[in-house]
Structure formats: structure tokens, C-alpha cells
Amino acid sequence: MTRSFSALLLSALLTCSSLSAAWNPLNTGLISSRSMTSHAGDLYAACFPTGIQKSINGGITWTQVNTGLPQSAGNYYVRSVGSNGTWLFVGTESGVYRSDNGGATWANTNGSLTASSTVYANRFYNFGGVTMAMFAGTIANGGGIWRTSTGSSWSIGHSGMGSNAVVNHLKQVGTSLYASTSVGLFKSLDNGLSWTAVASANYATFALAESNGNLVINCTFGIRYSTNNGASWLDATGDPSNPTAGDLMAFDGKVYALCPSPTGCLISYDQGVTWTAFNTGFGAADAISQDELYTDGTTLFCLAILDIYSIDGVGQGLNDLARATALLYPSPAVNGFWLELNTPLEQGQLVMLDAMGREVSRSRWSGQRQYIERQGEATGSYRCVLLDVSGVRHWSSAVMFE
Figure 1 (cartoon, one colour):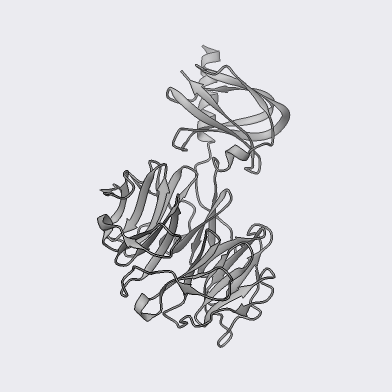
Figure 2: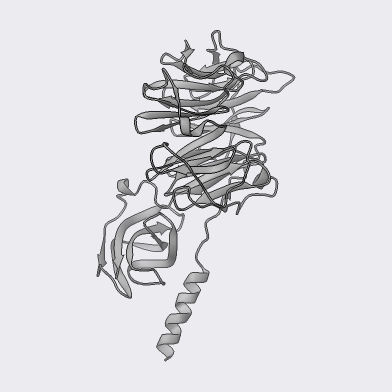
């Protein structure tokens, strides 16, 4: 009886000590971060109106890198930053600028593109060796998509779209590109040289993501998803009814959505079918003033008005994991299993993820060999991820519970 009580008490303590997922503030001190990219291992953020900020230590500290960028009354009106692996690009209200030395200096590469306070490069993408600058403003006024392979000359990348369209977001899914626009969803099969309208989504769309075969869109009617490659769309549940802007990102087996005030961030664990609010960790102002989602390796970033926030993906990059080897037995398991590492890990946590990438339990780890008790996991296959004290993945494998 005492042994049974001890087991129950240990299980309760482990459950209480589980770390619930939350956004982590970087405490950057940056205001109005609009855009983010990574280049040669460093992070860059476009902040309005203080310019481009660079971090060489994963976002711990930031320094301004604005040499060569236009300024007005001490302000740098930058709107975006992007990288194609060779060059950095910045979208400003005075045109597009490029750097080939990690942001130390910038040079104008705008050519004849429109540049104003309403028409400017709002995002940069790199598909198939082509850099695409997505401009704010209607196509008729100089907005739309502009392509470059050289980094210095630009060509039209929105053929097939109407002149009244404003492009909000680009996403590659397989060999297709999708453009979310103010007049509907468009699809390209030739890397953006030409576009055709997706007839089933002829309304304002703000962003698109793909998750485990589902296409998900954030649109004027809320969030919708398609299980048949966009032939038809179903309404999600738990989402706002009529957003006017937004972003989407599939990450770590989940889908994240940003919607304007007052909804904030939402999360879906089932490929966009159902949604719940996910603003844990945000400051009060940032919970309703989020701008963009960005992924860098195994980290998801959210840019907000007063700070930048991050989430580390427990399940990201597991196929490349080679930090340690271990013996897990028995599998299938009934009440629990033994895990024995070849190299001891003095402190850590073992996280269990279900088939959809959701965290279902978390246990403390210490040493080289430990028995992991089942914590109510249903019958099925789970991914075990062992994290060290700093949250870095140390080992990963699968276990089956009968």
C-alpha cells in the first residue's frame, strides 16, 4: 500500500512539474519588429523606424547595421529583411537594398521598382534559386511580386493576377507556389512566372500553410482547410469569424496562426481543423499586436510590437539527431519502459509526443539508466525525446504502448 501511494505521489509530482508550452520573450528591447531572417548563422530583424538589427548569438544581444540605408530625421523606414543565402535584402520606403557582407554595408538595388510609404518590399522569399520580393500596394500601383536571379535586376512575378490585387503571402507546397492575395488564392506551377486563380478560394486570403497533407488558409471568413489540394474548403472551428489580416506557419507538427486584435495567436494540433488561443508568455500589448511568424531551424519566432518571442520545436529535426545512442526496452511496453544511455545525462527531461506532435507527458531524467512509468498514455506509438537541462535534444526514438 505504501509502495502504491509512493508511485502515485511520484506520478503526481512529475505531472505538476511538466513544462507547459509557452512563448519565450527574448527581451530584445526592440520596438516594432516587422520582419526577420537568418543569414550565415546570424539573425536579422527589420524594426520600424530604427532599421536593421543583427544578432550573432541567437537573439541574446542585437546591434544596428544600417550603414548605407537611407534615413530621414534619424529614422530608418525599413519594412522587411530577407536572405537568399548569398545576399541579404532589405525593403525600405526608398527602395530595395542589398548586402554581401552580412549587413556591414548596404547598396541600392531597386532599379525601376516603385518605392514609397505605401508601396515597398514587404517580404522576401527564395524559391528554386529565384528571390521574390512581395510588395505592398496593388499591382496597378507598383505592388505585387518581383523576381530576381542576379540580385540587381527585377522582372514581373505576378502575371495572371488582376491589377487590383494586393499580394499578402507566398508559400511553396511541393512543386507548386501559392499566393494569398486580397482578391483570392493563386497557384503557380512554373515558379512564379505565371499564376492561375484557385476557383474555390476567390475571396481575400492572408496566408497559407501546409500540414500533413492539409492546406490551411487564413482568410476573410476565418481559417479554412482543404483535404483535397484546394478543390474545396471546410471551415475550421475555434477561429475568429472575420479577420482582416494574419499569418500562418506549420511548425513542429502543429499550425500557428496570427490574427489581428483581439484574437492574437492561435494553435492547431490537427492540421488546421480546430483552433485554440495560444498567447501564453506574451506581454499584454504583444498578445494583440503580433506581426509575423518566422522559423529558423528548430525555432519558431513571433515578431510583436514590443519584443520578439520564440518556441523551440521538440520534434523538429529529429531525423538528423545523433547526439547519443540508447537502448529502450521493452517495446511494446505496458506499464512503462527502461531507457539506458551510452553516455550519462545528469539532468534532463523525457518528453512523449503523440503521432500529431503534441506533448502528452514529461518526466524528469537523471543519470544513465532509468525506468519511465506510463503516465496515462493511450495505446499507440509515441516519440520519446530526451532534452538536456538547456532544452537541447539529446536523444530520440519511438515506443509503442499496448
